[in-house]
Length: 614
Image (cartoon, rainbow, N blue to C red; front, top):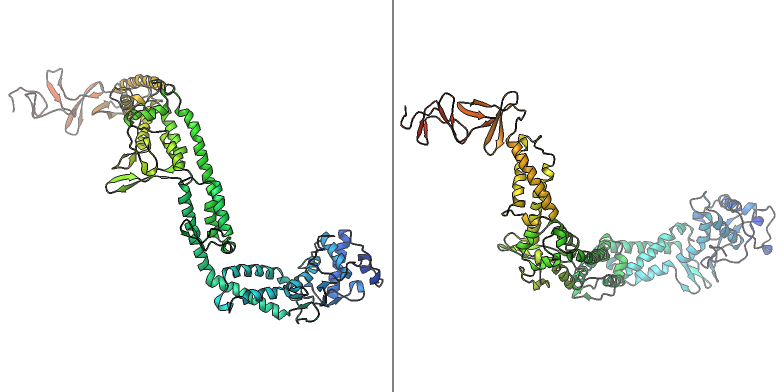
């Protein structure tokens, strides 16, 4: 049997007239019909074309075809396409061509009508039976289902539907919309008698109008308020779920369980003290397509992704454990001590003083890739001081978080914090309660300065040589000199933060910087005529050709300066070839009309005598 020969389509007989008989010029002999069927797409198209032509010749259309309307196939006697048998079968399609229509539907989709002709005819009897038939076994029509539903609420137009009634109304509305295309085929008058009866067109259209009216009224007056209540309770349940289960550590099984209860409406009137009476199955079925409900339900299921991140972070601890237990000797060659022991044994000042960039990389990665996933480090200002307000993720248990934090912290300098079930915050504890900074922040800032110093003595001066250094390189050279002090001097802040290889690199850089300083101080030319800043209050002076002035007085306004070997003299007595003495002050300016070292200098800048003043 083909796919269209379903129990839903009622027929008056089981043997169909063959296509050859229908299309032949001979008068059909119905008693002699055979069970031949259409076997090719071409013959199916021909049959449907003949059927549609017969409808047109009779002044009919699929959309308005009524019970007992007749058509004549290929000029033969008229046949009723649709009949109503009020004794046993209700609405039926004439068996004379039903088999051919079913076979045609299997083979071709006819494109000449607004409806697929074969599908339409096959569904026609089933549609009318569903819409208005009162069958011998009882009234199951849409008319009856609608009136029964709306009749359960006194004067439904005023009191509206209940939420469960609304759910049923939506399902009936779907059926009504499914059969809308057959409304033009409804018989105008009701038929009564025998065991099978049907309602009239008006009874059906009135019932449909009442249904749509009830749905619209509920949506206008009750839907929004009920949805708001549902959303409010659903959000509170989610927050309580995270609060209650988060302390233990949320698992996929717990998420799946509560999502199932929400969908099935089995949470009950309350969940962990939070009202959840509106979270019924009926409400979920109605509201499950609402964007706000979808978003809230996604918050539960998105927990899966959070769980994955948490599990990855917990698993990552094993990788870091290897690095933490690596001999410190392999980091800096100074002590044979694992990084884990080093962090847990020393006080914070010693940790900072001896931390290398290789060691800090592990600490930093552990903090960013593990702890930042498991918790949020935060603080809150209370009065004039900051207090701990860090929060763990709801998807990790307090005991596991405690282990992760304690794996990297000093037990000597940080007091316990039992309030958060974490006994040792270590380098992640608040170090300055006035500023709210943590020991880790201080360590990170220190290591950033170390890296900056290393850059100053390596990368920043990589292209400088004693040959190409210029006056404009003054700031870069001075920064390198300051960095060398911090990296090599016993009083430097970064001496202990270098690995063995970095110490060698810094020693090489120190020699280079000394050579750069010597070249800078003895710059032969800046390729710029006139004054140029040599730094530290010193000034150089070049002739117009860019060469340093060997020995000359240079005027600037009313003041005079002495240049010797390209550099301005400062804080010194100067004896000229003529036997005169002059004094240059700290700014290099020639002194006039004042006493220096008990010696009077006149208005021309010449030393006269200790007592002369005229």
